[in-house]
Amino acid sequence: MCFGTSSGQLSQLAHYGPIGAIILIIWITISGYHCLIQWYPPDIKDPLSLINFLIYWIWPVVIFYNYFRAIFVGPGFVPKGWKPENPEHEKYLQYCDVCESFKAPRAHHCKKCGRCVLKLDHHCPWINTCTGHFNHANFCWFLFYAILGCTHALIMLCPCIYRALFVQYYVYARIKNVPLIYFTFTGLISCILSIGLALGVIIAVGFLLIVQLRSIMKNQTGIENWILRKARDRNHRRTATFIYPYDLGFKENFRQVFNWRETFNVIGNGLIWPVCEGTDEYALTREQLEQKSEKRQRTVRYDVVQSYKGSFITLSYGLRTCICIPCTDETRIPVEKGDYVHVTRWERYWMYGERIAVNDKNKEEGENKSHKRGRRFRGWFPRCCAYEPFRMEDLWSGKIDHDSDVVRTHFANIGPEGFDNNNEENNVKNEEDQLDGTESTPIVSTSPKKLRKRKVRQEN
Image (cartoon, rainbow, N blue to C red; front, side, top):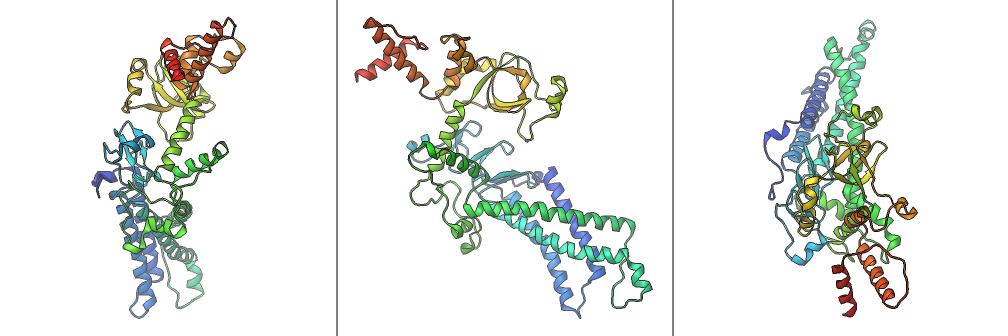
């Protein structure tokens, strides 16, 4: 595959997910086979026994085939340094600081893989890679065949264990034409454990398969479903209702993943996608940029007053902080006293945000002018390590001066878009009132350079 969809090395299997999945499949298969040869062994005179034997061994073959293809083919990554052919379309896309390239439509950055993944659905630890454009079909086939294989194994295991536990009844009752099944203690425990594992696989994998089929039916990934939910909440604030661009209809949505018309080959390169009527290929990316802009407006700055090394055990910060940890696999960031954090999520004892180090404060202005902002450190940290220096309640009540450095810094970094323009308008109005001899209430002051720009725009 192009774009370096996967490492293609056996070292990718050196992870608890693939190791556990492979051991689980082999365990259930061998236990079921041990019961099959005792309860319903293959016999040339019985065609059904031969068919049952062949079907039983077909399941692990197709399971491992799709499983290893999902691992080694990979989801597909955006090429490093990629950008759209038309430079005017760059404003509709997000820029990835880690990959140093623009994110293609439907592509998102995966922290575990360290790359921007094409049509990212989720990162699956059981295949040690993401589920994306190139391996989505193999991943779904793997789930489907795993359920069928475990169901077949259960049909072999349950009758065998029942007859093994009540073998004395069949002996004393002299029931003929019934195979007598004997287990060692280790074999019996292994088969009982296999029944529990097979039931767990059927329930867990079945639930995951239903979720995947629902996503395919709507041509949505898990991330796009979340973006669409927020877009619907924003419909009351705009004139036109947002239309999801990739919903092509029930049948065509399934063909985009499985493509039964062209020998199940993957459709497209993952960079360009067909869209429905009334939309364009950048409709979803523009919506996501608007949502991120609103998210930045809700960001609150916190100053760090206590250092945190990013350790997992946080008993020194309080027992409740150590116990009530966030239920997520997101990283934890170390913070130093004197840093500040732009917080976007709050828990009772933890907060999530982007850390701005002391040494990086002087570089922010130059970095914001270009796409390359450098790697951003975002994650969780204890709430007791930081405090909020600026609160709107204090500004409204008069406890904080409107022209203080804290207020200026707060609105300069994370204030709503257009805040400075509003201040410029108020200051220009104040100057005009002062020239006319009238008094007006002073508003937050701005620099003379901004006022000159505002006057030039009014004159023009």
